[in-house]
Amino acid sequence: MNIKVIFMCVFGLLLGTGTVVWSQPFNGGPDGPGMHRPKVEEKMLMMLDLDDTQKTLAAEIVARYRNLERNLMEDNKGLHRRMTDALFAETFDEAAARETFRNNAAVHEDLMVLKGRMISEIRTILTPGQLGELQAMRARRMKAHARHAEFRALVEDSMAARK
Image (cartoon, rainbow, N blue to C red):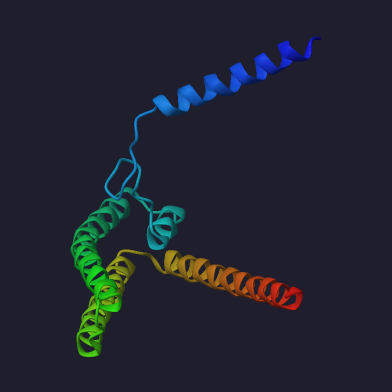
């Protein structure tokens, strides 16, 4: 087969694929479709064998807290911008930077407390067996985190040894 024919076929395939991909609508961005990924606690709930009543109650709880979380995350975005502005200001103002950081820390604290309240509320609708399974899932997750941390440490040590 002629090399020109092969080249033209490959080029045509790449061009066609690129055209199809480029013509797809962009749905990205923080509020675009498909941008909500289930959080860890939502994934764990999905893996439990919940009855219909529990599913409804869990969905209501998660939705209620998700709206509160979104509001806090919006506050966090603004504070993060102010923190970055404070760090890269023409003249560094330590007092302003510290104040912005404290405000940011308060939002993170509120987010943690909010998540704790949500999990606590969800626990009230679970059976003892489901609570046990939830604890087992958490233990497996923590073990996976530990393995990942060990692996990252090995990689970093290996990279440091090469330098």
